[in-house]
Length: 271
Ligand SMILES: [Fe+2]
Ligand SMILES: [Fe+2]
Image (cartoon, rainbow, N blue to C red):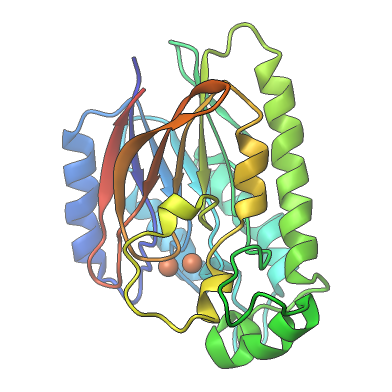
């Protein structure tokens, strides 16, 4: 059995460092075999790095997924979102001996593997108001409903980037699934990938919901029987770990971190 402590949405800079130090102490006392941070550590990159440093007292493997906030550009210039995601953030994570879960995986002695991705929203979550919207309509509405519309700068569309990172994760899961030494896989994503993970949201703008999920990726993850748990963040609304039965494959444990600004949370998964 492996005990994995998962957190997300630490938002250093909005959430004080002293609050995160308490969180890290509490996580260490849970005696995990590994720790996962499912995105939104801090921006700009200096605060992302300072958040990584706050995790250093953890004496176990630490896996990091980037969140949308971590890819925000700054008013005074600096790197664009592609440079942050593809070069700068992975370099800072690896320089600290932590695991950039977007490309690398954590292998534990009992055959548990941790993998992850930012996942990104692909407009697959719809409601009656947006059911017939085109991707172009979502892209046009975005600056009015989520800060990503003004602060993410790169050459991708949302569905395009979501597809890119999803394809890479699925290719890695194919490799891991074929490895007899791998017994079970925990997937950490920043953006939730199952409808069930979106429970508990309170009266948000129905348009905003479409920037909160990648349900396409969730369906693809279920094709891998070794994927036994999926934990995500981003919505700031928690789903306590729950084992969800699946047709034709073993159940999958789903969780969503309930960290909010100034109020970070973690969950402990025993796999
Ligand atoms: Fe967040
Ligand atoms: Fe987020």
